[in-house]
Length: 228
Image (cartoon, rainbow, N blue to C red; front, side):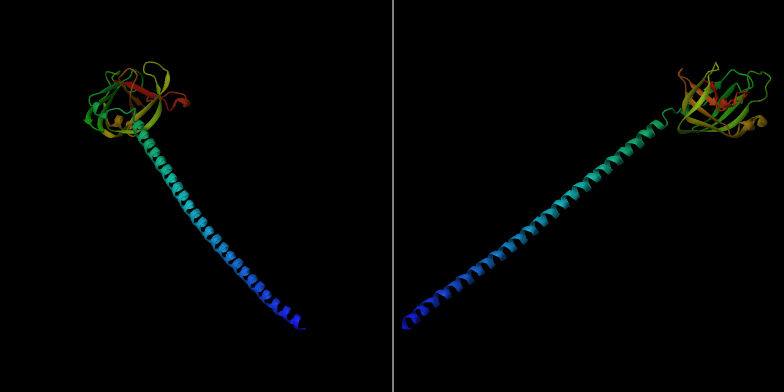
């Protein structure tokens, strides 16, 4: 009995030491787990922050690129508008050179002369006469306004032949009112529109309505060409 009692007393300290080691091991494991969790959390926050910065930079670049495209498009639009403006009146006639200019044609039942007798700038008095008839009445005097318009195409009965061709014009002549002379005759021209342009011979032409008439319906838009 005395020997067994000593053995039991020697075993008790060993059991206490094991429990202490187990507790210490669990504490260490717990600390490691906490450190691991904290480390992972910090890493995720860092990656999230970097991702946000990356997205912001990408968004900023996209915004700048979009702004650049808009600027380029705006510049292109301005360039196109400028180009359109430059070519819009490329066929225009210098109205200041019309004073004293006479436009004639050889024909029947149509005026022989459109003479820009007086005026300046955009307003002129035009004398319309039938000089092929020596005993014709006093010329028809009308007031006209000259202005540049966007380029349009008109069909012409050629001067000196019966060929039909198309020309581009930018200068419009509108007959506004009677200025004097044979007022009854002049009134029939009020509201008529004619066009001025430079011809291939280096001179100037005046395209007027076809006062002679007597043409098929498909030629109703074809105008007469008077030359200076």
